[in-house]
Image (cartoon, rainbow, N blue to C red; front, side):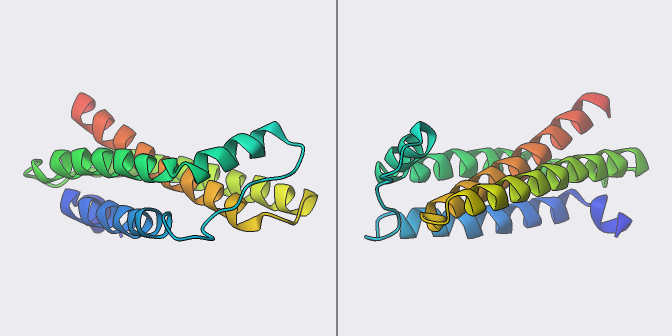
Length: 150
């Protein structure tokens, strides 16, 4: 596993596949009717989230994350040599932070779902977007730290 973590190309392939999967879902399915519905509850946050989804802003967010992923892939590919042990440990820490933030998002998603069981699809979309942003930005932090320190 450490050998894979040291490979910039492996990292580029993984983040590309991850982004491609979520981008296809958000870009293709956002225009389908029934992808999201209007929230009719009392929460101002969920009303704003409903408006965000109904305006298909998740597509814009997807394109921004695709752009950041392309930047990451370019930075990873132009690195000619594998990362050393130090850089592999930085990636491990970045992935650990992403995992902790994802676990926190799962806990919050669970509590929000228990609090109000309707509108589950839109809540899950929020969870996926938070998860995707966490992964992409933790990888960006990793690449920037490795370029700055090494």
